[in-house]
Length: 103
Length: 512
Image 1: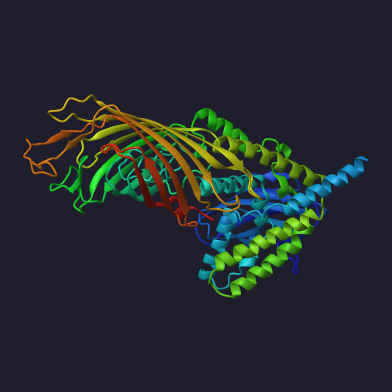
Image 2: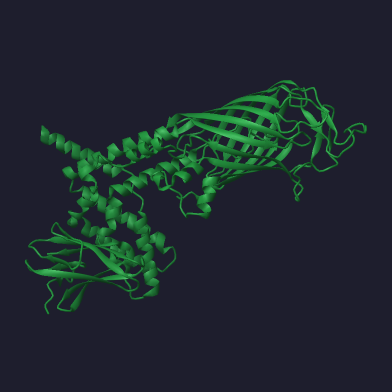
């Protein structure tokens, strides 16, 4: 179990990662349901599960577009690795999109 | 030289963008702030700023939001400053303050209380309620009305309903009998007497074939939709949002300030929290715009040019709608006191002109209006014992309206000058219902009694009217003075004063 994204403590929504690693993303809602509709990283868009991307060198944005049944629900995004998960960030259902910075 | 031109272009774009009106907070952002507050109520550990990232700004930078904000702004300006609506009874009515009927009505409901008389003889006190079929359908059906920015969200049937409206007038005065000799209270209730003591004085239906609020025909709709879509933007459709995405260095400090501001506001408690957070967000938005502006690039120039091209196209489309002539057809049933019931068919045509562009606004709004009325009045039934033709009279009226005061005022008084001519082809017929006596000398008459008056001929009236609106309340006060060479029943000239109070419910629903 080794997560590829390492949070930068001083900057929220910002992570570091070595190039060439494959990262899988999942979402969970505090109430109701949530589905990831697409993720986009380094110009590549994935619209069907599993929502994965391969890290590249340099600062890139990971954009996640999602839909939640309850607009007031908290939606948590996780990196998944071998059945374990680590929280990347939390959004509200109504937001519909989230952006994370990966260095 | 080319380099200097580019710098000049960037500088101009920067100045224009700086001086542009701040965009309103998008509905999406308002929803996010609302959800933050709800979540905070449920979960004390929730920190609203923890969910903030730069996507919060995206919608407010996108062309689509710009488009919606611009057209909403123009729609509000037009609705606030329009003066082409009829609130009181139509011109044919007995107690009306209007010599000439206007083409449009309130979008939902209006009420007018009027006192006075024009062509008729009795100084009446009249209450008129008007409503629009589309407004009622929206009230009980959908919770929202299609904005002008998206008129196609209505079905064809709903678009047709937009033009249909109706009215009901109640005469609040004690029924009276008027003859060339005298005016006396009637001893018996007239037709349509209400339990409150009032009397149904008339009802009408009208249809606006060319409605000014929105495109009404398929062709207009297609033209409008083409105009409000930003085709020029092309590859710039994602506009400043893409710029924002690539300008993380510029958005990051503003984002940090916004998070701190949000946390500070939440710590102050729940009072007006939504408004305070929206205010903080609007400040941050301006902050981010300024930051991005500092990185002036060719993208920014292209973006600005696309927005300017869009503004021009939208202004042209709005101008076509605001200044188009409107044609309305109206049928009204009238029930004048102690007279045979009448049907009035009226065509109303108007043409706004004299546009004024207010500072910071996109399109001109009209400051003057010319309205023409052509009408005929028919007897609905010929009383037994008389032999007039069905056609009682023909009418023509012309009115010039001009808004007064500086163009920057939101609610300007309107001065109206009008002229009206009515040719009485047939004599007026008085009916005394169950009253078996003439009004002055108690001469017994057969029941129901009728009297045919020698009232054929022309009636000319001129009127000056001032309508004073009371701020954004929807209440306005029409006051007028009129001169007529005679009235329908009395062949003597008369100078009269009329006044009223009208209330337009639309203004209450108008969002800031």
